[in-house]
Image (cartoon, rainbow, N blue to C red):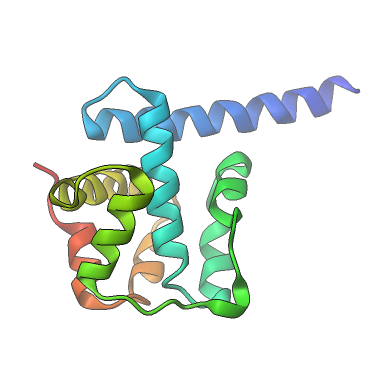
Length: 143
């Protein structure tokens, strides 16, 4: 294996760790496993409300390792999955293993962290594709 390939792999690991650190900080935790589980849930619940084209455009913004988590378990023939705010909150709660009451704060914290790392306008373009009730949940100020 050449040094270049190893360097590329190290770079994607580093970039993914930067993202996880941002999520953990926004959540007020040092638990990287929790941050990963919650970021993965956030990515899946966003992805499944998007069209295939928007999903692919958003995925291009993710570090390579996060892109793998984003696409893990994805069924492009079954999207977008229709669910309302309550359905979103219930799915997020179950997948992230957090209480439904925590979802608004957690989802907004992750949105803020992701926004720090994607190109300007990319997150907004993806969020425009989902219903206002869910979008407003993701954009509520994390308190």
